[in-house]
Length: 351
Image (cartoon, rainbow, N blue to C red; front, side, top):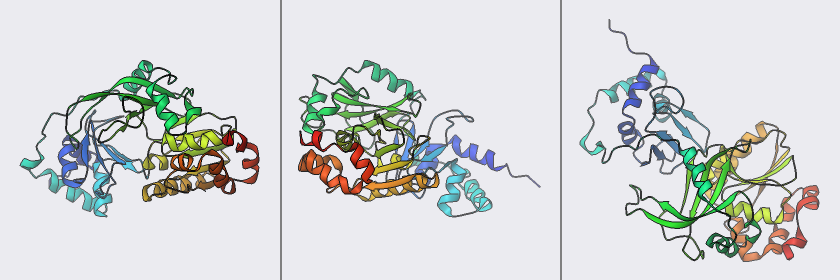
């Protein structure tokens, strides 16, 4: 009797043609560089689940590995079949063997070769080294237009005068260059892992007219853009840089971190010694889902969690529409009274 290859060997065979697998089982996703991006393991449209299309056959960074930033789930392609089909190992192996025996359909042929695997973290660090301080640049005008002039001198923000914007398969077109606001993504130890890019209009009065004017280069999962504070046991976490900076303006003594998306908010790695976490939610389904995942993870570690809810869609909209003093008044009842007394700056907000 022939013996069946073990599960690890089946997973490796699936990874050998990972893009064909993704086109079959994750057809609502799309290729983005060396990753396939989709909403979740159940083929929902979105972008929080990443499958590696390139890399070695084993070890760190191997192709076929996936992670869902919104849930923290991860695994190989056989694990993904088990999740998607709701099956046990035996049934998942049968489905995988059936897939492996099928020839690649014509419409799944690669339209262009996959890019070579490269160290995107080092690329992010090089980009930040090329950046310059924000003062006196279109990025400073952009921040002022968002009510965030206090952030112009923060070291985690940089300006790139001519940042490459690459067209994608989803949004084809020529590659172009635009000024960009750079946001430094770091781990808990302060090491740079990625850079967030916001492409700007030439005069800084808004974002560039691009299909997706915000992108991240490097390793984002678990990390974030950090804005300093003197408090050691409190932290505010939110999605976007502008949302988080709006609260940082009112509570500069509290450390703040921007995860750069709702999915990555749920995957944020929390620092040791944290006593109270404030989650600045965006008022949409994705924001509520990311905040709920982070809440569950934080509470499981014994951390007190409080949600901060904007009056409109996010806190930067509130800052621009209400002004700093009225935003502080909106925020005060949501804070612990001791934290509000120690850290909420009405006087600075009114000024």
